[in-house]
Length: 326
Image 1 (cartoon, rainbow, N blue to C red):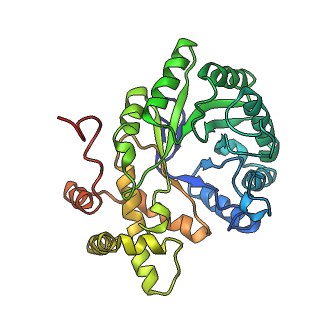
Image 2: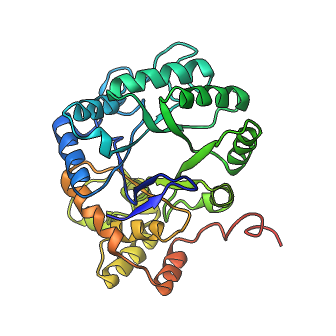
């Protein structure tokens, strides 16, 4: 396994992160345990979850239920595991139906952290991520709540997710004024089919020293050989998008075949090539999918291959403002 520092911090994580959004939603507890065992065997020590994950198996989908966190907690309870894992979870989404059971008020952050610790059966969270920006709550309130959790030893680092570039800038400005480290990472939607963050989020991460953690690295399965799977009769939830992007997908899968690599591995290798990217989050549904994803770490894409990928999946034209102005 390869490891990298999480942004400017001294914390090292595996170059691939284990995403657990499927735990409790499409993957049962026994299979989830197998996946986590396999991850640890291969040195995948960066586990990413969220308080809201796994709720879809419940009848009331208006709130979260912490099922993914509970699975991880029971896996930790077997012993000999927690001390080897860099554990990341998130706060923001509705966890109950009350007006203060969501978002980033100090009230909700404190309560959500305590609930996550209980479900995860641990005394601390290594990376506590804000799942979305909450512009209604002032940064002074957010940072005060996070600082207290750090002082209490309940969290070690703070991260963001789905932030705009200017949210990262304003958040870091407020943290600096308080002599607080602020954000260590940003988890964003980023893959060959979704490159908007190249405009401002990636430059902000680079400037402020945040580790970029891409979620949905395979574009919801589009970059995982969607056309080939369709030929084999395997259904995809991205059927409409497949037809819309069919010409690009045909070119992409042909290029991957020429390289002798699986499309999913090429997509992950493309992300790993970016020096701002710390670790893409992979969300395997089976142990085999996890093992297969490790191949991406061994692939080195040439400049010519990257140029051809840019032709197939063009980005926004570079960083702002040069991407759209003189």
